[in-house]
Length: 293
Image (tube, rainbow, N blue to C red):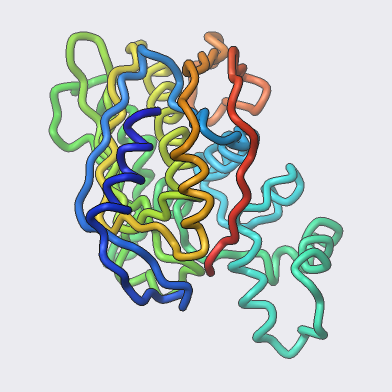
């Protein structure tokens, strides 16, 4: 995907060195936008292999309103493990367990998972159970879909994961924090605002995830997918990813794959992993990178 490679090049050529929360350090730039026409193929990165299984299961986890890593661990998804593990190491019950041992405890013990696998009121909670100051709750995703069906011209087709009073309770405040939909000529488009963008590890996942969400919501609202627009705040490359980025920039993008979705699913909550089929994905080999927590 040329849009993504252009982003990496932009950061490398115009970005500045910054000290960050994790202590790793970054090259960073502020304010960047990419647009993907979903009729041209599914925007899954081809200059390195991306783990689609993790993307689908994480998205289903969000849609279900879940905030515990138990479902992800049970399905072999590791992308959220570090944050609850760090919290566990600060407790009196921590006895030197490694991250791998922690994950096994989550997998094999519902009681342990309930106590230590929780991430706080992160994405799924805000999408499906947003708490207001008066104690009322809003299912933002359900309201969004209802409004797309009944009031498609609305400029209020928005889901917001940034709930300021609850930020201190979250293992990680939302990076992809707000998204808006737009209906025109029978097509559904989505714009995501992402405050913090780890461009090597995170952004390929985010592009594919929100493109897929757009396709799913289009499916249940009888629309066709339009564009996915990705707007970034702090777009950065971690210092320990610079070599991997150079390798990726040396590779030529390949043809985008096609994503097929079960046409018989009519409700957003009814999608399962088996309802998605990716065709024609032929990426360059995987490039590994360390997660900064």
